[in-house]
Length: 267
Image (cartoon, rainbow, N blue to C red; front, side, top):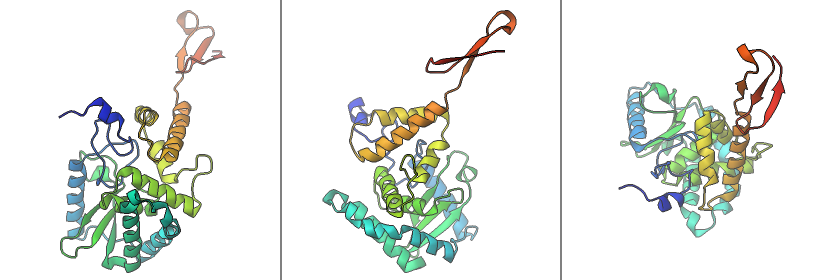
């Protein structure tokens, strides 16, 4: 049954697709891109086969320790999830921190190659998860192309605990704020800005349009900062259109920007 327009407008664009499908439980994938449960399930099955054939290896103990250290600032931010409605996120963050302390007994992290090479239909994915059927431990798969491994682990683990995608982004924001790693100009986690930077022009415009029509007032500060950064990127990516002057392309011409502002030039 198609979703009503009213219902769609009440959904946060970071947590739902343009058609209204929820992103909850789909792992970590680029902001502004879309995926489906079918695509992520296929990728998880592929990664499981590679893992069982020992074609994927757990990350090194040193990297595991680095991730644990990078996520440690979340302990000081536990009060951020003190409201009753945030109990699910608080429990997930606590479970992740405990799992990192316990090591591979509770949590195993594997690095995988470019997801677009693992499936002919899947797009870029940063993090996926599953529960090991033999040991019961949580298995996280993190893309080797993702520079912010700790943030991706945090996002992916919260997704594995059915936290809505907006809350996963918000947890990344809280982590970067506590760690002092927010970007200087926009005060956003670097990973989110990298996601925006990799979008094509049409994808970027679609994301901005959806952020501009956001009406749920969930995480308004984060949404406003993302909207501002997207607006800046749209402005930077405007393509000039050349209008030649005179017959045969001779004479002077003008470079006309998409927003109708012009500047003269000479040939």
